[in-house]
Image (cartoon, rainbow, N blue to C red):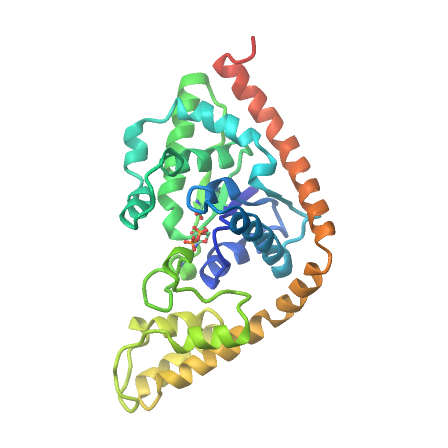
Length: 321
Ligand code: ADP
Ligand code: TRP
């Protein structure tokens, strides 16, 4: 199976990204052909600051490598290092109705949040479709918020296949049940754009401060508490096995458990979980030249994989004469 997914370098990566997308991707590399990439063209729709975009891209690369992505086993690259994706985007644009894009909830959400409604933001799903279709991916691991984008990708591919004959594989979203929507410290969906994240590689002081500010209800310590309605429970659960989750739920239901204690446990678990990766990341940071070489090789491999599809598409639509 060809498994593919990308992540935006639009801010520090957080545990929502990790459990929903990064960890599954790293697992998939064991038995599949994996395409993993940093979508800097997509990030340009909201990050319009040279240093922030460039640094965010390098940080996301380091994060992935430190968390265990193996660039020898997988094809790991930066989206804009394979600019052919823009050519496919342009071709797909001409087979994508305005109505389809107008229904995109992510576009409407971003406008509601005050982002400038420029063409890039509107086009975002077509570029994402090109990312996926260019490599003929079968499976796309994502969080639930990306489900609609995957449906749009399939719609665009079906339309193209119907017009010109079978060209694209129809990809499927793969959404993990227990990490489909991970809450942020304010109880909304955790997101880089809501300032409510627990960052994978936050420093100790900062992480502690963030965890201590997780919003909980005002049930007194001695009273029983409902684990299913508690975002703190949901966050700590990410780091627990089935038995530990059950034990924690029992402690909630029994009463006498303060949220401060649970926050302390979350801090310890999360800090410990990422400790080996933090060390690896520090090592990687010592040799950025080697990282650039890795990404260059990744882009070459991706470009080779993209070439036959792009040629076929150019041919089918009549760009080759
Ligand atoms: P963000 O919303 O923080 O900007 P991205 O849009 O870059 O994150 O998402 C990268 C990947 O992580 C996507 O597959 C997305 O679905 C997933 N993801 C992001 N936040 C969450 C979350 N809170 N819960 C589950 N999945 C998430
Ligand atoms: N839109 C995705 C997100 O915000 C990122 C993305 C871009 C992506 N291209 C992709 C995800 C291709 C999967 C496949 O998370």
